[in-house]
Image 1 (tube, one colour):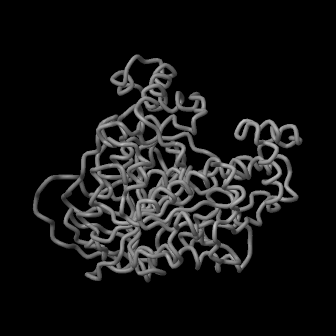
Image 2: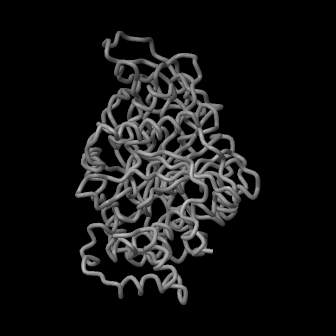
Length: 490
């Protein structure tokens, strides 16, 4: 996207020139920014917050000369896009290694000092962009009188090869930009809540363990965090060796010179790690993240909301044709892999909680707990044991699309969280119904309430009571939901 400004470290600010009535102009410490006045909110999109040098830390952009035209989204990180990205409109954005852009949505560029919500997108650390239509922050900003920021960061090998943690450092650089500039957009740099879904949710855990981010945010909301993706330095080194072999080079220095298309092609051939899709993800035991991520996140006193969707894995399995003819024998095989001699008892327990499900759906229910719910609950338990404020939720609204086969699947909660049910692809994913707005009102309001007060509106999670807010058409606070299933994972 063409811009009328270039980064610089100093230089006088140019005089103002008349701008159309539909634009919004902000004079922030970095320089003047021109966005779009949407009526009720203003949007500033495609602001470059840092420069990129492959496999190296981002270079903060602290000022520019001229005016930045923040009226269109910037390039997304190079990636092999998936089905969900195409559904959400992500395929329409150009890709470039120069991808460190952020977007600001605000009710007013004034001195109100509103809470700030910074969104870290998901996509398994290999896909996504902060510019997805579902992530548009205008509705959430207007609803909660908050400033919403969405960010890009480097993905795949370019973001998380070996011990580099470049993508995590990008997120820190974006938070530094917020700290320096958000007051000009009506935000409060001393009240920043980071929130994210899937890889974005586990990225928040990594940020908690990143010393460089210690004073840059104050609360966190982890939606369906992909906790099993987080890895240590030994795992990162082994996976990096595999990737370099696929790329046909001997070292990271050689990979620095490889064409980006070759890097993406090697990523596409990289077999999924059996240890939780750890091929590219935040890595502990490194200069950026010195200590084990979950240990530090458990000890972190910053308030945390964490939750999962009831049927996470149906997003990945509902249309897996290899599972369409599964029988009870397949159920037995999959449960024996997880529960060994206790497989029969586990199958009985899951069938009692998920009656009238097919063999594939029953296995998906177990995998949802294995991959998402149980790891999230363990984070809640460990934080509770240390007295750190934590709230747990379960998103239970089931999609009505595609005959209802996807249930409350992974990613379904995003348009509800942003109050964006009318955005591109939302109804295709959620199905129709005016009552959906009731669910959006619950979830989006809880998010903005947490940003304002540090309390989402239900009791804290404790190991004994295990209070869990059910978000759906019949909201309630459940005490230790599905306790029999949880006990199987001890």
